[in-house]
Length: 183
Image 1 (cartoon, helix red, strand yellow):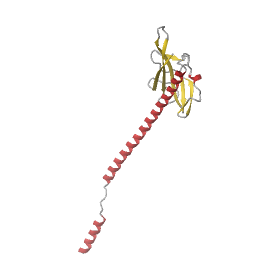
Image 2 (cartoon, rainbow, N blue to C red):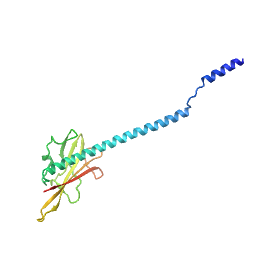
Image 3 (cartoon, helix red, strand yellow):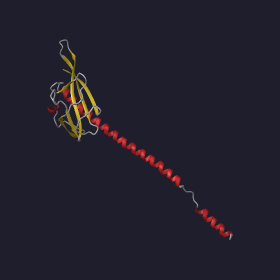
Image 4 (cartoon, rainbow, N blue to C red):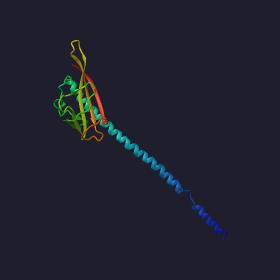
């Protein structure tokens, strides 16, 4: 009989292997879920920042294109982007863009809006995203005869947070570029 007890005791020790308790498993799952949640949040915000950077870069390219075209025309106060820029040239990042007359934007102090018509601003649509451009200038330097020699050219590019069409407010995103030209 002693032999039988010893055998059953030996079998029991043989089947008792070290294992994780349910609490250890739950804690491991909790740590793993927190790590995965953090990685997913990081990825989401990284993609959001990349989209914002791409939008800002596109606006900068639009502003540079318009200012350099205007500067190339001598900084004329009669410059009209609708007639001056070949639609085939208005391509940004390999995508065609459309240039339309648009809504009023923001004008820096002491600058004159260009052109001086009732609808002076422009809307550029690129990949379904709307950018609103205000072009303005300021004559800043005169020679001894009182004739202006240097003109500042300014482009203010704004876009709504949703990149849609509609009214652009002061709180929406914007980039502004200024360059000068000798008259």
